[in-house]
Length: 168
Ligand SMILES: [Zn+2]
Image (cartoon, rainbow, N blue to C red):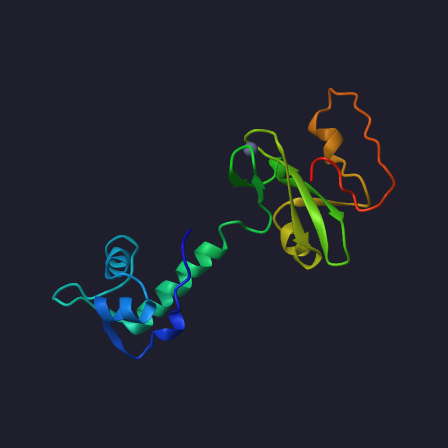
């Protein structure tokens, strides 16, 4: 798992060599070298020691952090079958309100057909709806019946309590 580096310790108006940068960030020199060689961190490598503009380093770390944070984007669910984040099949999902602030987003994995779900914030729903079609459910998610249209299983809704079904 990629770790977060303390970009605030880097001063935009300073120039760092690899060692200084690694020291300031509390990481290994090789990590910084790898950023320069493989990950597009801008540096002056025409002579030794390699020099990195503090401003460039800050931008690089910021972009890197955003990438890490965006790994599981809002409208994706984690599929335990594929062990990977997936966009719900057909870009459709159900949202079942669970508490005042949160609800469960349910969709099908486009790769293996497994039911995926995750808890999302009610306030994130609009962002999610910009990407996929979300139907807000009052109680039992319709996705359960759509998951296997051939089966005649009747879903018994035991009261309308907190919706803790076996898919949870
Ligand atoms: Zn899957």
